Amino acid sequence: MSLSRKRLKQGLVQVYFGRGKGKTTAAIGQGVRATGHGFKVYMIQFMKGNYKYGEIKTIKKIPNFNLKQFGSPELISEPSKFDKDKGKKALDFAKEIIMSDDYDIVILDEIGVAISMNVITVEPVLELIKNKPDKVELILTGGPNMHPKIKEVADLVTEMKMIKHYYSSQGITARYGIEY
Image (cartoon, rainbow, N blue to C red; front, side, top):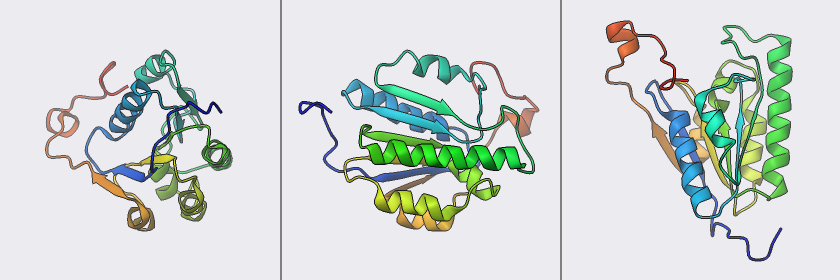
């Protein structure tokens, strides 16, 4: 690590969850902003294995913004052994990245969904939050719910509230370039 590397004065814990659209997008936006100031970002996607979302192509082009996906590319309704194994690998990898102190911002995308679907348990996530280096910002995203214990220990909690969505109001499904 270079002595001239910019570092955050204080790394906090941000949480984005809710039924509304924009949780992953908000986390990526924060990562893009940070790389523009010379910070290093790592995004770890839980339950989004090897699917080529549009943001993946862009992130690969951004210096100091790394990304790794874990899980099945298909949506799951009931986690299998495969899903739980991938969840454990994602969590172990996240711990390695966070504790390395080589990255200023670490995004744990869809970790809230992984917890709520019992792909992983909340306790090791709480340990990561408790033991993270002081200058590492941690951003956690999730689905409609985030575990109450995570919301309690986070410094910023934003709930994305759906007021109206074309999925339900107009029957429009996920659109290329907009939702993926």
